[in-house]
Amino acid sequence: MNKKIQKVLVANRGEIALRILRACRELGLSSVAVYSDADRASLHVGYADEAYRLGPSAATESYLRTDRILEIARQSGADAIHPGYGFLSENAEFAAACEQAGVRFIGPSSSAMRMLGSKTKARQTADAADLPRVPGSTQALGSLAEAKRVALDVGYPVMLKAAAGGGGKGMRAVASESELAGALENATSEAERAFGSGEVYIEKLIQQPRHIEIQLLADHHGNCVYLGERECSVQRRHQKVVEEAPSAAVDEALRRRMGSAAVRLAQAAGYTNAGTAEFLVDAERNFYFLEMNTRLQVEHPVTELVTGLDLVHLQIQIAQGDPLPFTQQDVVLRGHAIECRIYAEDPENGFMPSPGKITRLLQASGPGIREDCGIYEGWTVPLDYDPILSKLIAYAPTRALAIERMLRALQEYHVGGIATNVNLFRRILSDRGFRSAEIDTGYLERLLAESSTSTLESGAVRDNDAENAATIAAAIFEQSQIAAETKENGNAAPANAWKATGRREGMRL
Image (cartoon, rainbow, N blue to C red):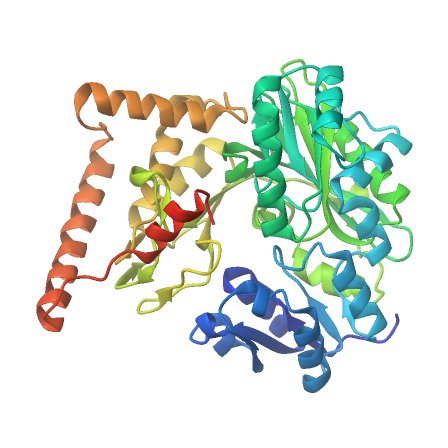
């Protein structure tokens, strides 16, 4: 464990792959990228010191191929693998295969991942560590009859959740027993497709909670610290949309209680590296353990900005056996950070994915603005993966100024040729409820419902003048580009294959 890492293979794609590759360069480490056929022209491929083809575009034939990834690690001489998030990042079998192959997995051990990566086993570990948790089952459901018994015991409404993953996949809210059979079938099949495991458990649905998570770091020398909290309550269909650090609803006393509980959980599982304990917080400021994410989170940049720490650097250093270079007393939160996940999707058309060529890219910059980006002008957004394009982050001394900086950055930001959710963020950050931090996990769905009602009543959504100006200008530019391309090519614009796929699948990619 004392031998220093020399070369890191990044088993991922897009903005997170580029984020990790940059950290490797800063640490003086050689890097290896892998790519599918759909990603041959992606930014991370050109940025790495070496790049190897994994296979066809489908994730099951490329980014989920443990055997192929380990073969490339052997071929390239990589002595460590960073999984990023998604794909194999929470796959205990993959972590174990790395260990058996003598390649360091930059993340927790396979044994810790089995204890906490599975949502059901994490709930068992939480019970052993005496953490308050959401009432419900601690085992995967074996049958519909068992689901009915558990639901009756905890009381409706309940939530069905995939045991092997997150990101809103394999989750169904159930209001009554008449809905349970169909919801269980759908949740099981979706979990199987997304994570390779159809195991589902059931828990009480807590009404209008805040979703608060605690970032953890633990080394191989017994040191474990928490790095404050992130507010992740702005969600659509259980998928986070906007994240903040710190939470406006958490004071220092509650932060210490939640942080101590998260550390207790990690120590009970013998956890090392970066991880995130997720909690629900009710109106009375009671908190309940929800699950543990045994990987780097999508929203890690907001924690980096308010703590001044580089989590990817620290992940690599922990993986090679270095002790944490600070203690809990050294962790100080300064300022406020907000992250918006920029997706290739159309909120005005049911959030349908929007693949295609990026004909124009105007990126935001200036004081307090960071963008973790995986796209460029001229690149074609593929159909095959989650449609995240980049993460736009604003940092300022106060939450109010962070909101204004983000709004300014969103006015500067434009992606031509495809639809994005940028206008949705302008709407959220301009909303009185968000600005006053009166949010919970149902906030965004209510805002969208209000907007839909307003549209039906008035025939149009009334946005602020600045947003209208930016939207009209972007639309004029984009239409002129499409017209020019159509005239040049002598034919119509291609059909939206992603939209057709979304309709067939009936789910968000």
